[in-house]
Image (cartoon, rainbow, N blue to C red; front, top):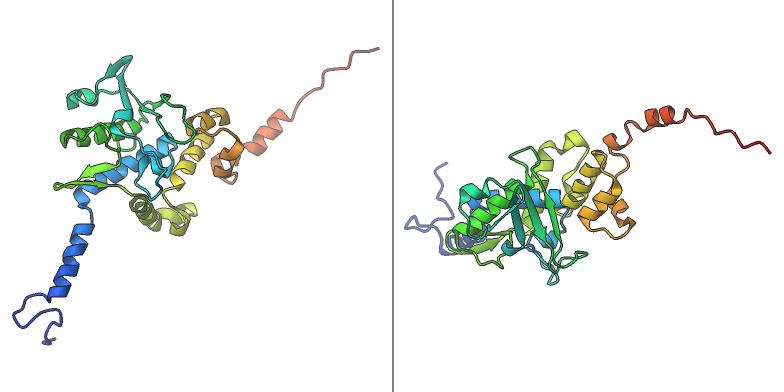
Length: 253
């Protein structure tokens, strides 16, 4: 419109305070090319392994116990891979991946919990663990490095629970209305219950769900939703089919 830009000095340079503020924003924002893959990997691991937020994301909780690079175990068939040192092409051959519990909640120290391939290369626990290992290995990360760490090019940063919550809510904003979901209902904590519900809808028995999620009681039931369509869709027909029975005659006296 011909008016002077109020952000600029007479020299046409950006006003000093604004320049510093924008510079601070730039430093605070993680590089999208690096944080994106790491975010996707941690979302995937949280879902498939039924993890708690402090196990897969940086949180303010001082008692959180994240899984670290040294807590990963990879196998090709029955052969264990030395994942801290082996070449990338061998990592891609992994057929089974485990996380080892050290000080995580409700976990037995030294116990391993593992998963195979999901069948979807873009959403697979093995692929996500291999991607994390390769990234950390490339930047010479120590064995104690949490899996949620990523290198920015100038130093290490962490995937936080707020980053994951923001990512999930963006997805729900885009497609959640198709599934009866609203962004405010979703957070990083939703991944644990989502994984449990996926198992329940797949007719996995509750004992196996409890084992994977390390629930020692019926607390797991608080995470499950009885209104999920796959859970209740066949109940009426099942009741009708199995409600047709004949009593065994009593033994005559």
